[in-house]
Image (cartoon, rainbow, N blue to C red; front, top):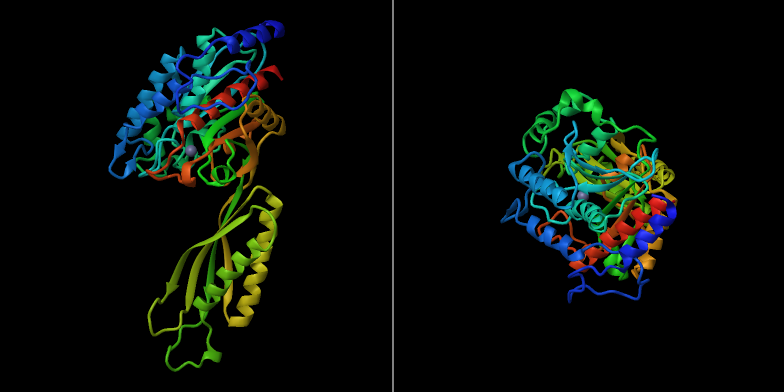
Length: 439
Ligand SMILES: [Zn+2]
């Protein structure tokens, strides 16, 4: 399609009324009347129907490769078909559909998320982005609109088990990784077979740098920033990098009754001082960096013995790798100081290191402009949680759209995003795709 034709079609799309959208719960701010929108009611109906799959007394249980996950995937494949798409399952087990574009030689615009859940989770983490991506394609199909670029809708498998489907899509998993056991009790290797993938053909599912024009993922925020700020859309600046340390503090176990206070090498006391020092250091500088001492194992863990050893973990995250390096050396310096003052020794070991994945500035601008034209308030923010988008960022420009989580709650049966916010997110996704297609 030539550019002018496309613009005309987009204008025609915008002029069409979207049946059933103006329900009582869906409010619109002043916005440009020619901004296209998805069918928000249809999207919310799909989400409501999906809520019944894997629902147990504890919450939503659609952990990857479980029977409920298989049911959820069957439901999703059906949604693809209702949207006029022809879904396939790639060798990695990701569900995919492609609509060819009008201009030859362009790489696809990829949109999607995941539909698996954590144990006792909610219905919005993943399904919102997946169903919105399908809804975007459905809206374009309803209006007989085609993009210049091919449009690919993807639902990644096993996101909650460590972004497995998207890692497979960039060739980031080793053969040994496939033998890791997922929460369902099945190995990833077994799971891939179970969901229609093919381990021997995994290479066929791998995308290379340059294969994808760009990737968008809509997701619930899973935090409370947007709600607190009263904003409708989060423009994600990137997914924070993460560093996990395991720190062993070694002191000297001795009698709690006979050892004078000034002659102790108390590993627990040193660990406690260090925990406070980490918190003070991170809070003492401007920025959104976070650090958590989340696990403490004391030995001998006995009432009448001075603790001889403590093993603790620190989880450190920020969007800026420089800050992660800075706080790493800061924690090491604090450990030396506290060790010297308490007669203990600190040994650091890195458990996990993942670099920040930054969103593409032009795609962020497109999301922001889309939100503005829809009359939606927005703000830029980092993602503190991991997403499939962080893997795709290694091979293509990516961006993410956040919508508010009520109470900032996620990975919980109380996870909830209001229907109007779900629709707003999908509207922004549609317009961000249209903007990227024009660019
Ligand atoms: Zn998710």
